Length: 163
Picture 1 (cartoon, rainbow, N blue to C red):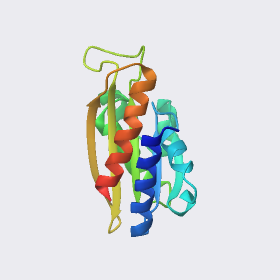
Picture 2 (cartoon, rainbow, N blue to C red):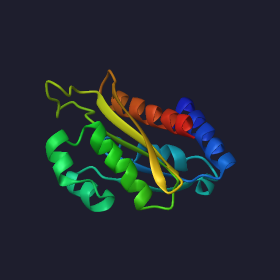
Picture 3 (tube, rainbow, N blue to C red):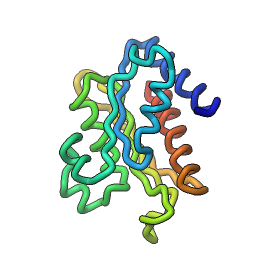
Picture 4 (tube, rainbow, N blue to C red):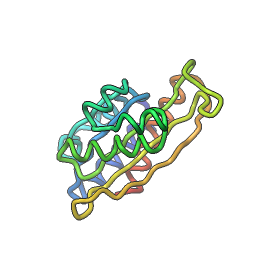
């Protein structure tokens, strides 16, 4: 893992641990890279609860409770889906903070309104038994690896912001 990712994961872990919070992830286009970055940090079991890799729509529905009508209406790469994924993580884990990511890393899969590099992220924080949600759609340049890495960085930065 490169130094920038490691540093960001370490900062995120320190912030979570300071507040006694646990993180869980839901990843599609990043394929577990966020969880990998997190678990590369020694002691991360103190603040990382679990990760879901929900690459297919069926996995999103079965594991996270994403609604079929939302998938049909908005598509898998959309803020509403990322929000349902982030909320589903909180419902299916013991975490108080979640991050979800779905995107088009390329080289295929793009459409006119969702080009390669489109990534939708959502973060949720459990507050008084309800999820406080934040989401964003970003567009990253580069090849598949560059898009995925940028999505991981954005996901972790967003966790730091929601803490």
